[in-house]
Amino acid sequence: MGGHERVIVSLGFAAMAGSVSELSARQIEIVTTTRALLARDGVEALSLGAVAKALGIKPPSLYKHFASRGDLEASLIAIGLAELADAMEAAGEDLQAIGLAYRTFALANPELYRLMTSAPLPREKLPEGLEARILVPVHKVISDPHLARAALAFAHGMVSLEIAQRFPPWSKLEKSWARALDAFAAAKPPG
Amino acid sequence: MGGHERVIVSLGFAAMAGSVSELSARQIEIVTTTRALLARDGVEALSLGAVAKALGIKPPSLYKHFASRGDLEASLIAIGLAELADAMEAAGEDLQAIGLAYRTFALANPELYRLMTSAPLPREKLPEGLEARILVPVHKVISDPHLARAALAFAHGMVSLEIAQRFPPWSKLEKSWARALDAFAAAKPPG
DNA sequence: GTCTATACCCGGATAGAC
DNA sequence: GTCTATCCGGGTATAGAC
Image (tube, rainbow over all chains, first blue to last red):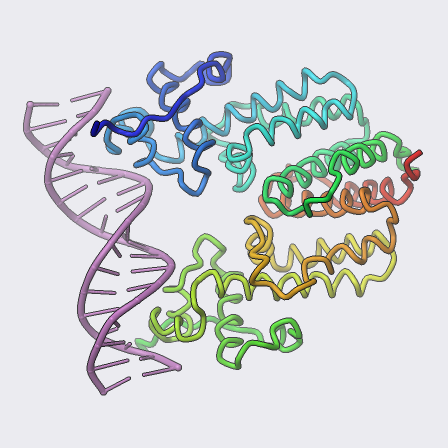
């Protein structure tokens, strides 16, 4: 049938989005569909035309809901950051568990993760304090702020290399994670 | 007057490129100019049109020297990987020095570094064994291969976040580097 | 809120003449 | 090895009708 292309959208991940409560119902539909499209086709294929097609509308119509492509992307990024922060927070005060939560989120949402991290953050379009939430759970376990930042950078390096398929297939990444996080946790305070 | 746009190309960085010895003189000119253009305008602005303009020729002419844009990019990536490996190797067997070499290369060539790391490696277009050279210097200092990989991932995470301006301005990144590399160096072997 | 139509920009790549 | 001419595709965004 000459219908438009539809994207299967699993409901649920937008429902708990407290950070997007300022979005209208239609905006949430659009963001949700965009997220599904992003997951399916990758960040390079993301365009307003593709989003419109998946929604069954024409590209110009999107401008009634988002002022620009950048605004739509910022909503996606905000949702991703909030979910990641939630996952890390829920992991408690075990560094291994926090690392696993980070990795699990990134691997479950690789294209969203790339969108979130491959460009400078559009900070002015993000809810205040959202960015900082990522660091909080790590801080609870690693008191030295410099080492806490380093641990987060390690996590980012690991998942971005894994997503980009930069590791040889025989790598045992779980061991790299475990040993590095052990090393971070065991690090002596600066003397 | 009215001439085409020229890009200042500092000579030298292509001269030592043993890994690109298979390139013709004209190809080296093109790659060198492309590298300068990349450094100046960023990876997003990189296009065959821009490269041709900087060389004072028309875009179709480039196809006499490179079969595709991807081939030209692969040459750039190969040069970057070789330089990075050289720098790390020259740092000797001190993990702090190796880390500094890594960071120095990345910050001196941020857009090239992004090009090198933000997409899957075009391995079939790269000289054999080049990719593996990066890991060698780290291996000499950290015998556990899993921890060595982790250290490299840490370095990648640090520089990619720094290049993307993801750290707050007040961060003392030198301290994060120093303490994390200390922690890696001090890590106990798996028991 | 959606449409059609459009303007304007960009990109990679090929054919064939010189 | 370079050119002109051309083809193909894509993208963001706006104006104005319905």
